[in-house]
Length: 244
Image (cartoon, rainbow, N blue to C red; front, side):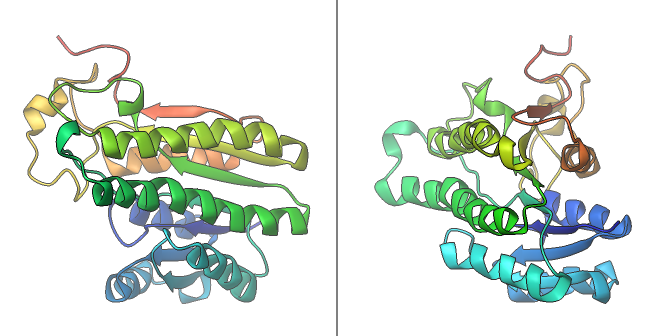
């Protein structure tokens, strides 16, 4: 039976591939991004107008989460899965981080995930059919890099990890599972012209990851009926060791 899935930040990179995979397996997907034109192009490329809806907006605004749920209900009758993919990342020395810098990460990563999830959970509780939430975190929470000063971004993503385990406990009795995928270094537009050889050496598998590999983990957690509160690293062994 087809599910209805909301994927935030689905106009490029990891989110776009996650949306593609859900559509290809026959699910309905509500796409989200801040750029209306990019969002429309992705919807057209998916070539499944009967399965796709779009909601443009910044998830840092609680109204966007409400609009995503409203679209899912109006187009497809409800919601089953939320993938909190939208987020931002960047490096800046700790002593140079300004209050606007910190607010940008907290709003875009933590607050956006928090209030979008809240909107979806309200609907799931109303439906009383359970559901699945998959957050996107990062393995850098468990193993930071001295050459990558990203304290502002990482505390916001650390909050996403904490939210995952907290909500897994709070919502289990309602049949709502909450998990997270923690990617390592993945080939996305964010990686850009990064040093692939140097990045590859950080993982036991001696390469960087591909978006399809994070997508596979999201699909698994979306369906894994006996898994909740799990932070699933997709990192080629980054937090376990280093390639020789």
